[in-house]
Amino acid sequence: MIAVLDFGGQYAHLIADRIRRLRVYAEILPSDTSPRRLQDVEGIVLSGGPASVYDPGAPPFDEEVLELGVPVLGICYGHQLMAYVLGGEVRPGGTREYGVARLQVLEEDEVLRGLGPSETVWMSHGDQVVRVPPGFRVLARTPDCPVAAMGDPERKLYGLQFHPEVTHTPKGMRVLDNFLEVCGARRTWDMERFLEGIEEEIRRKVGGRKVFLLVSGGVDSTVSFVLLTKVLGKDRVYGLFVDNGFLRKGEREQVERTLGTFGRVHTVDASEDFLRAVEGVVDPEEKRRRIGETFVRVMRREADALGLNPEEWVLGQGTIYPDTIESGGTRNSAVIKTHHNRVEAIKRLLEEGRVVEPLSQLYKDEVRRVGERLGLPEDVVWRHPFPGPGLAVRVLCSDGKGFPFPEELSEGVEKVADKFGLEAEVLPIRSVGVQGDFRTYAHPVLISGEADWGTLEEVSTSITNSVEGVNRVVWELTPLKARRPMRATLTRERLDLLREADFRAHEVLRGWGLEREVWQMPVVLVPLGDGGETVVLRPVCSQEAMTAQFAKLPLEAVREMAEAVLSVPGVGAVLYDVTHKPPGTIEWE
Ligand code: XMP
Image (tube, rainbow, N blue to C red; front, side):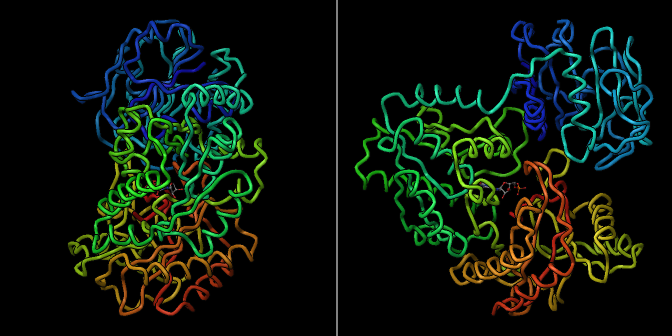
């Protein structure tokens, strides 16, 4: 077993996921786990995190962990921490590096075995190690980072400033694999083993009770439902499908059909409750909070109406690992945004132990593998993810004033775009993003002009890296005539408009056979324009949603999509999101 000590980085769980893909069981533990508890593990990883080793409030850590004789790999913050406590030197602040960097490998030894002299790696840090501790050697550097990798093979201690766990580091898996070799870790983890363990856990948790499960039709809740039904039997699992009014076109019928073949599902139309709850609300976090609470209220009401005795029932949920991380589910991780599965009422049920979440340890790719093993049809297993609050988080609202910005912001942005021969304009709205380990609400920038994907990628990265106050870049597919924010809230009319736009865009995506090329393609309604609304297409490629790249779809398909969306009455303009995650999240709210 490999222990991943969590210092609060967004990627702590990603490290565990990658190690598990290499078939070694990995678990996340708090940063201050005692050395006694760690003495029998095969290896230890110190994760990244948003703190500086000099912060008085930095996550606690027992230095004796480094003296156990167990191999240790420090990543990003973990690398700096290792250097700091063992007598090296860490320089605070200074050059900030976000994104891709060129790694110059000086010693291919041990953890860097199999890498070429120059490799692409992904960096995200402020502080950096400038002198290695006694006994360590510098194994690699980048132009901006003198100690990008260090190691003491004698004590089997290694540190990496870059992130081997993200897909933007192409040889990252090789590096992690090398570390597992150093550890002599046993390759015994697979979904078969997980299923055996989880079946036992489901029986233990549920005991003699029954499960009342909210199903959305998404992969996570569907797999949970089928798994629970398989373990407990059809009579003991009751699926409740809440139509919150934020579903896509035709979705309700499709979900009822699919789930009905596996077990007991009941649908409730609660769209009025939800619409009322978010009436007039503009703030995205408030919207999410109200949707989450309405969810719990509807669920309780339905449970009462069905006469479910709370003593006999537990709540089932399709929560997966990233859901718990992104809400600060692990102790040290920064809050990115409130997840609907983690609203207060649900938290209380969790505390009372009346919740079963069979997939809460798994990543999407693992959930899909479990789904395949359970015999679910391919189109269900490979469905695009869809957020619990549904289209509600894709209908941006505005009080009509928007978010004004200083003149310097426009100037900064124009200057960068000008280098690429493009025009850029800051938009007076905001969307959510994630930069470093923190959430940002910032302005999108509109790029107009002819450009290829490569140029758009460069200009987008340059703008978000160099201009503070911007976290997203969109490309103008059809002219956006007016940049004024319109007063707009979450209404049935706007939802219907988005439903149609979303449907037409996805029809084109399917028609081109591009559905499996993308992880998902949110279609977002933005209250900008002059009468007509603005629609943003946000197709992304991703492996686990923690990081993502905007999809570089064939331009012809994109043009066709834009036309299809523009043909929806009420749509005035179509834009294409050309932002990676980070700095922009996949969803806009
Ligand atoms: P972001 O926008 O954070 O999204 O990059 C990451 C993944 O999570 C989905 N998402 C949600 N899923 N409830 C969910 O069940 C939510 O509140 C929620 N918010 C985002 C998003 O679609 C993407 O796949």
